[in-house]
Amino acid sequence: MRAGGPGILGSPEVSARNPRIDKSKERSTAPRERICMECLADSIETQCSHASPPHDIAHVNRIEEEVTHKASLEPKDDLTPVSLSEVQTLVKSLKTRKASGLDGISNKAIKCFSVPLLSLLVAIFNACLKNCNFLPAWKEAEVIDIHKPGKPRDLPASYRPISLLSGLGKLFERVLKTRLSDHLLGKGLIVDEQFGFRPAHSCPQQVLRLVEYATEGFKPKPKPHERTHSTRRLIRAEVPQGSSLSPLLYSAYTNDIPRPTSGVQLALFADDTALFYRNRYRESIARHLQRAIDELGQWFRLWRIEINPEK
Image 1 (cartoon, rainbow, N blue to C red):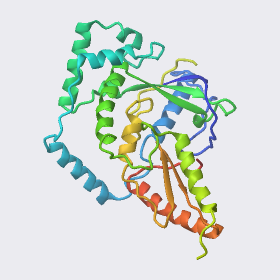
Image 2 (cartoon, helix red, strand yellow):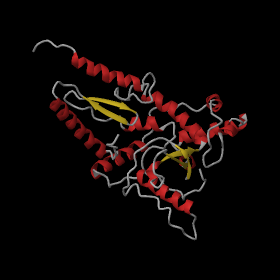
Image 3 (cartoon, one colour):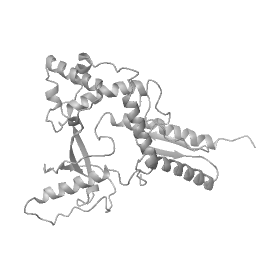
Image 4 (cartoon, rainbow, N blue to C red):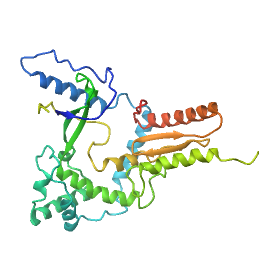
């Protein structure tokens, strides 16, 4: 992890999960910058870990048994093998100005790979698909902390973490994403309320859906910078930041989100969730929305998804 330049606004508060960075401490064995980086790393490790034990142990056990059972079965649909032409097309589309990950292999270097070298990469990708393996080295990331302008520099929450992943790993993610998208979207498995990162869906369309829903209620009705690094940390929760697969994986993980009852509408855009309801009486709106919030809150706790009520 290392610190960087300006970022975007946020609203940090001092808490157990967001301790102040004590810049007054000086140690003979570590410079002040290293201490700050360790504090930032502690903050990210805490944010990306489960804050509490499983809400429902029986539920967790059922899921683990189901996953173990599914993993023991022969796959019903074989994934399409990776071809040399597919990888060549992906390599051509790489942006050369993107930073490299911990392996130091930049996109510029990948674009210079010869055909024999790309053929070896194709063989690796196909082996990963066949063996259901995602190389551990591709899961590791270097995190750069970007300071949010106007925010106190002594709070870890005043920094936006940016993950730098392996370029080769991101190539394989795009290979996986194509096949997962064909399965999830091609078979209509993603709920209709999810508008994030889907073809022919966008945030304005979700807003339009809300406007149309509200407008319908008004219609008359018939009567009746420094490169100081921290130690490595193991991230135990959340999807990888900066990964092209993350939005799709999150949508699949939350695809069984319960639809509210009593006419309350659900709107999703990636990891943003909104509820809306129309009625001429304010008390009725508040009552219906609160009931829907309670139902969703129970589901979020069951699946150990932490929500940010401030947003």
